[in-house]
Image 1 (tube, rainbow, N blue to C red):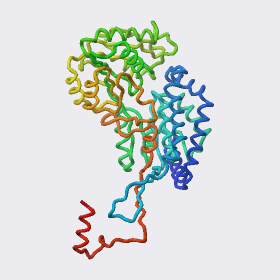
Image 2: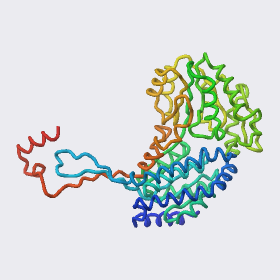
Image 3: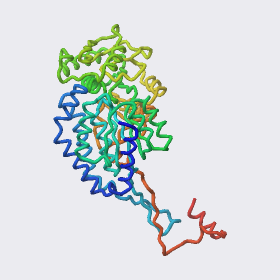
Image 4: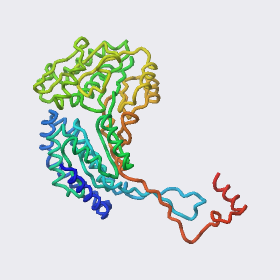
Length: 459
């Protein structure tokens, strides 16, 4: 799409927002209901697109994408009225007589830029929160997942006019044109490299941003862990969507005394979950593109493969692969893997693990498997990370009750449920001062008695 056409859509949305059409909570809820019904009636079409782009099964497509969007819609339809109401705040005595309150208001025109790994969830989830908060939105899905982008464009076209929600497809040229525009808020999910560009562009207009990025999320397994259950949950979290999950365990850091037991349990669980020949499993997905396939393959050191390692270029599939004898000098530890390759590192002292993690960029997620509560407390209190689980993986993001987001190099801001509504809202603080009383102490000429009263109030 030409830059001029994008600018025209943005101007239409700006005018529509300023008309006040999106402000009434009843309007917002009606629009969310319309989106929910449209998604439910097009579920097969969405699942087909996800299979085409990423090889996802219908079960996985619903579990990890469609179902989570519907859950976010359910939450916002139920609570949007309450979240939109003003929130009373205490009024200090020296402002008597007055009423203080906080009024959530939409930012205005929002840009949502989404990635390819969960192309439906990570586009529609933020959109639900933005619309619940009363904004208009321009959506820019990833060019790497074209089938899902086409379906999203079709569904949005069925629901809304472009003055309210618009979908812009394309590649770098469209991204550049959008980021040159003046939005009131930008929500970006993707890589750290592109996140820096987004933040730089946003700074030109002083536009606030939420950045959902990634990083090398560690999975710590200590000597007290329930190994078989840990292996089952690690395999699920790591190889879901072929490892193309921003919160997947990037690597396992296991206590030396249980390393061999864990490696054997992980190999056993891969067979249990994906079969003896995962490349022939129709429910096991594929890598998104040849470029990413080649990058992941380059991280596999054949001399350190202890399970898996087979690849199939024609279908862009890589077996669930486990690497042992890994150190931080290996290529696989030099970047976020974002694929079905699991390196195993060992430790003997948990405090050294924590010390090492404190020196690295803050990851989006951290997981610890342990039945020793002091160890769990030590890790969760001394390592900075976006969020995570104790004795499980990735499920912390599948709830509307807690915000999901990163910290430091893994991002800023959060969303889901109330946190999502608040992310797309400006909290306007208002003092409603009454007319029947006006304390004279703040006005000149200042008097000693007023100073004493002031010190009594402000201390």
